Length: 439
Image 1 (cartoon, rainbow, N blue to C red):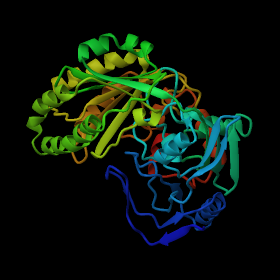
Image 2: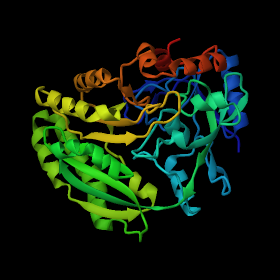
Image 3: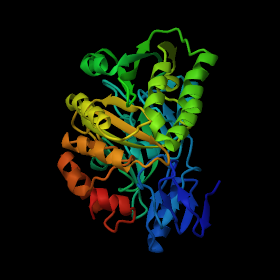
């Protein structure tokens, strides 16, 4: 099978619809060789080149007016190594397909985020993560990767081969080259028991350290305009599997999380004054439940209500204070916030531009329904987060620039020096990278 090329400017849009681009041409390579050729051709023609996944980023990280590289033909598993316990996949493979394929082989990733529509390269390049006491982001589970660099050469990177590139390229923002394949660590598939239960805001925040310490994966959602939270603890289980009943699962995951939420969000956008009352009702509608299943069926859930999001990583010890500041800010402002605020954690890792690089982290994510004016809310939240040395998620809305990142990432200079070496002409540059990495 060979790839396709489409010339003429059609408009590309991201998932949330807040970013658009008009590339001069789109290419869909079907092999690493075709990908390398597409990169060389872009350079010869004097165009920038950017790979785009499923557009789940809320930033313009993948936007380009040059050559847009679509990875939908670069999919599938290349190799499963049961001795090394790794799986090598093509960069365009959607996480949901990888998860299902691994499950059929009796394998699983150790941890993952809560959305699985992204491609493996898109998710890792922007630092997508779930929540975990010991287990870190998807990128931290990478054991090797293949990178097509600006001169069209293909670099194999791991702790043994090109280790300096490997150290940075696991979360490379698309700035170092185009990832063509990724090798992940996997383990035999296991069961997780999820325990979801409502809890008061004051109790969760007071007991956060204990809840974090007692659970392999702890997260919670706070409903603005209320004192109510929903907590979720996921821990490994000896079984047996006990998935949510079809009807109760559908009510929680589809009706409440997507169906009713869509209607409520639309109403809140149209009539913001209704939001606090709706929040009180919806935050009380959630009931406690427990279920046991394989990891991807517990960690991930469908997200059909389109939203826009900002998320900051803080030193874990600063998170509850910052969250209380967010609550106080909302209470004294005219803001009406219909989406819950999500709190997750990650251990420190060793990736240069990881939001958890070198420090144990907690994440605070704020969302608003697509099309709702978000600037005043996000600006106020960002002010609180940056006062605590927060690091914004690379794929979510933020206003930070290279000067700020040089302060909050000790290894920022290491990354930019590597970029100067691998892409001196900025073939993979765009406006977003110019802002966050400098020129």
